[in-house]
Length: 179
Image 1 (tube, rainbow, N blue to C red):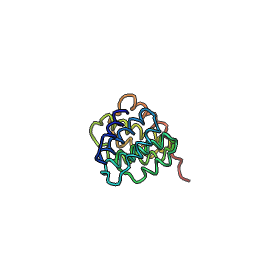
Image 2: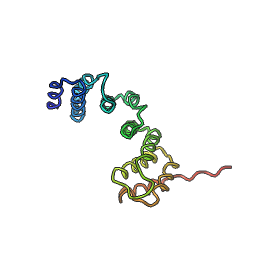
Image 3: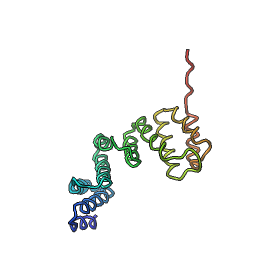
Image 4: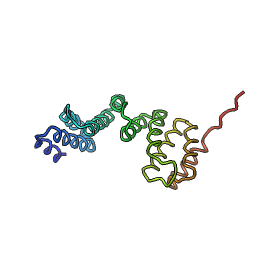
């Protein structure tokens, strides 16, 4: 944190200064120094920030809001963000709140873009599908679990995750017949 704080002080360029302040905010988040995070993010605000830096600052502000137990603020900061990183972070917030149906919707959009329809899945893709399945099971969302089963079509999520997924599929309650 000290190095990023010094770097921010030494910068003349407002964008470089904001970048150093954001790096300080990230380091302070990891150290759970929430007061430092807030001050760094306040100093990082600048009207001419490049989009990627402004977005990163918004993500850090959302993480700070979660740490300060203000998930609604975090969600409002992320509500218009449909990037992979934005969906990932919003999914984490919904999961932390145990708002499973919303987590399923957000992670489902992310999985649709990030996970191929065929071929071997990478570890991050396997982890995303496992999270989606776990959230769907928590939401009692049988339709999503069955879609995932068909979409995986025998591909593996890893031994432990395959066993968990099989249990989640077995836990689906059959639909009652229409009268």
